[in-house]
View 1: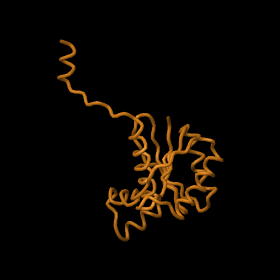
View 2: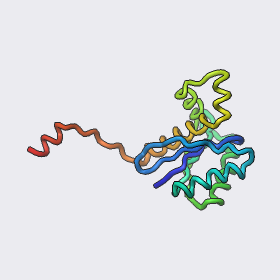
View 3: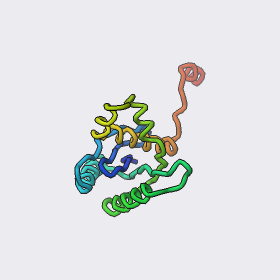
View 4: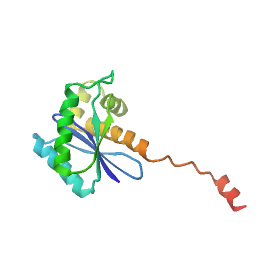
Length: 153
């Protein structure tokens, strides 16, 4: 399993990578000026990292309903599925960008500059992907040296 986490935006597409180790890592965002350029960035990552699954943040409203942005993401998912023929998993992305901003410690003028770079989008993609990975990969049990001594006895 090699997953590409995606935080879709009209201008930027945040990207993150994760695999069976269960750790999502932000990647450079797709920030080309046109959609085809952003899709090309995704294509390069699919080939380079041998992606098997896409995990896309789905923008539910706070009350659980969907709106205009969700329809926009559905169109993107359709284009993604047609271009790559890989499974696409939807993950609730409510507040992922706000959580990413908080984690990066950004506010005000600096926030706007960093947003343009795609760093926030990719941090949000990593949060989305990590949420999905956490649901699929069982946690590793903690191991203590005392347990090893008991097993040897």
